[in-house]
Length: 183
Length: 197
Image (tube, rainbow over the protein chains, first blue to last red):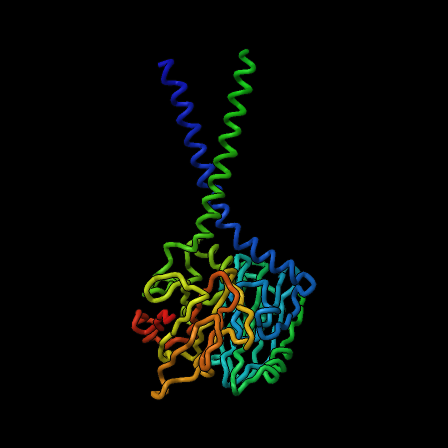
């Protein structure tokens, strides 16, 4: 009996070590996307809740986020909905691919619309999930984007094409506005 | 003596706990870096997300891998991404060799093939060409098929440069793919990559 007691103790300790190792495995893969997003957010910390307009990616100007698509013009809004609801509006090109997509704090996509559904102009209200903001009163449901996390990223993609060369697209790209509405 | 024994035991226990933390985190980092997960599907030499899975519902490991290697991806209904670092024979792409990528116009609103370096960034080259898409590729006489020259040395037509890189990778993007293409994505519907020199 006395001999089995230390064995049981060692067994329990071994089990604890396994639980710790497994927990840290999952913690590492869970936290990595948050770390990546925070790194990108830090790079655009002066642009919170403001649009940031990118140039067409090339080998020199696009070495922060991997796998840039050189056919696109990208715009981003690094958002923090702690104090406000955001009204995002602009113009949609009619014959080239365009999309607005939103990513939560762990970089997963939770919203996307493209030019096949949204015609001519767009207007969206970005609010935290469960928001009861007065600013959302009388706003049609389809215009509200509920973010699962308070922080995240909105990404616009504009496809450079024969019908929409860079110069024309850049004008549309720079026409995007973000308005902070009181929460 | 008894106190020394106790201190020794505590030190060993603490050491083992630190080892468990390092081991758990290390395996996590290794698995992320491996690029392999249960949500993956291989079609010929191309890798994509599994047929029954999607980026928004993927497992934690896949989400972590995407955040590191290709963040801010979209779901399959919007775009299908396929990646490869090998030719159709399964051999790692050699930037010093010449390859021909042969394919057909895809049933999608927009498709492209882009070359990346070992870090996933665009490759600096003398013609500032990083990709071909359905609009700017030069088609064969049938107006549907194309041949892209993937090479580190200049080619006359459809040259996709992979100059001065240690490793090269290709990404196919199929934006707004037809339902038929989404459901029947097979090796026959994807481009082949043949080494010619």
